Image (cartoon, rainbow, N blue to C red; front, side, top):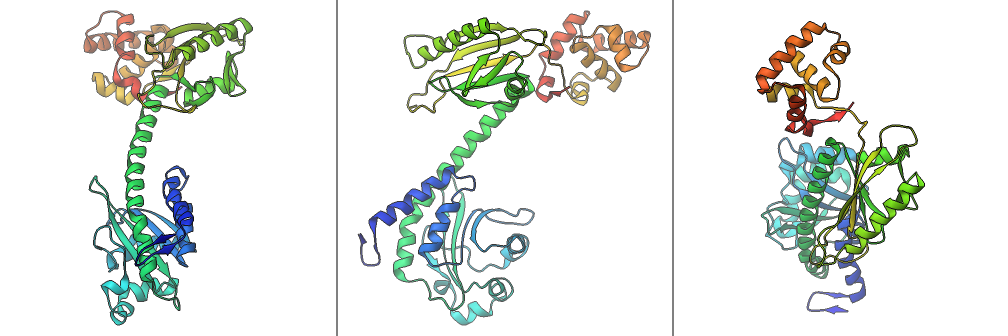
Length: 385
């Protein structure tokens, strides 16, 4: 039991509550199950964790449990938050509304009468949690009319949870940053038309990006079998498995530099072979567990054509819209004559555009132009053709 002057609570149940606080980091809706547990323990009708408080033009970010209606959330986020007297609480301290206002003033407040009373909320307990990065989140626990006020033991129990909420919210911010970076880098690989397959130490797929998903689903050259990458041609698959085995064997070996090997994978459709690179992934200093990346496979489809947005190309090189359109057709491998047909313009017009393009990019050959276009940041705005 947790025993002090205010708290008498089973240690096992408290441990489960603390565990739920940290488990909430991995839930689809963070902390939803934890707040449900707290709602049950506190005999509450609503429990809310406000991660970003509402303000003018921003509805904020909050997790609500209970019989929460969309109408109620919208009305608070868009209007009633400005009337809420239960804000600006002492930092990291659990208080009740009775610590702030006497019963008569509380029940006479517009916030109570117009917002809380219709939703059967009378008793309030909460804390404003200050995070090390200067952020603030709010925990709120509500009880209906006719319910007892929160006891000193209940306040004390929730107070013991506050440091864990603070740590968990801080960790959530760091994990969110890591996930945002991962999505940015994955998106960059997509725009560069490079498929990526990340493998664990057993050679099983941990992550794939959009480009890899499209190639694997087509099953033309490579596919996933038993959550492992395979080449569809037997000889290629033997070589691919060998490269993966070598990369995995060298994962975590400090005496061996990162291993990078490549293979050309035959496609049954008759299209040009896929280019595949297999690379071991150096572990971080404290990485552990089978869920850590051990190898990565990069796939490039030489048949895949993509178009950088013409407007980006135009802005980068000061092209006219017509010049930008022609430049992108040339970058996709068309001859000047084929590009003219594709764009529906005369050959002489295409030649005139090409002379202007050469002048603006300071090149004299079409191959130089293609190199400049493909090496420019225009490819970061690429979209599928």
